[in-house]
Image (cartoon, rainbow, N blue to C red; front, side, top):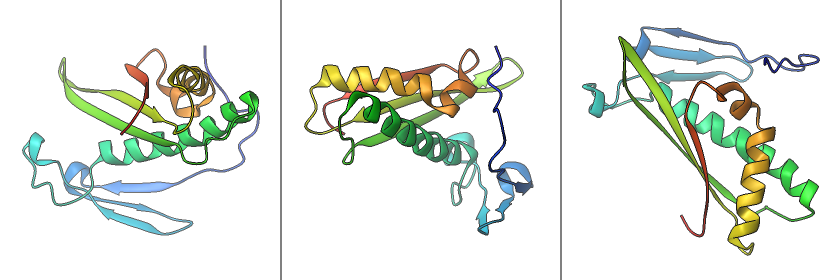
Length: 144
């Protein structure tokens, strides 16, 4: 099943050149990053890599969706933290990724954090985009 927006309200545009040894540029606002493969993958590790960018984007999106889930549940998540780990490794002729989302919400019982994390995983656009294709583990944690 495809998750298609009813209406596009914003479109992010970026141009990338040179792959993992290149540059990525976005506009509105202007963001420009040098891309480098991490040392673990044989690169110099002195720049940003796509997995870091994906982890930041997924984490920010998940955090926003966590706010929606919290509103439904009538609780505050203002001090919450979402730690996103994106792994990459060989898969067939190429590579594949996996994701771990760790959700920390101080002052809430871990059971309630688990429920909110599960609900957030249903709401988050990045979770919808990866569902059925990328292994994503969502975990409630008592500390980071």
